[in-house]
Image (tube, rainbow, N blue to C red; front, side):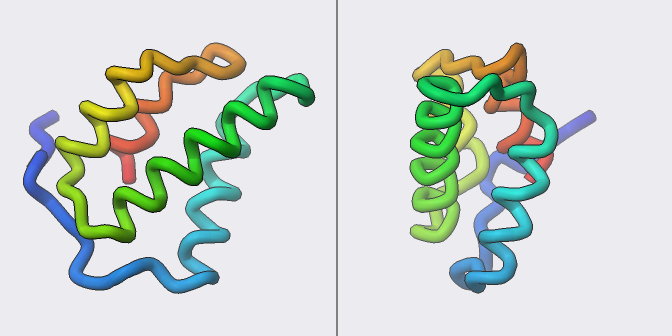
Length: 83
């Protein structure tokens, strides 16, 4: 599957869109709570802020991959590519 890494949003996400995106991504995680939940929320905030700021998908994915963060076995860079 080929992904256009230069893809950006034409506008910032609405509050409803942000909430929906956050819910969809969170449902894919196996978060046990505590630190996992805090880490997941922080990374989601970071990724969504970059997306809202008009960053390209490739840049967001590179940033998230660089962090090498995994929560509950979910690779966040996969979810950013899906978005």
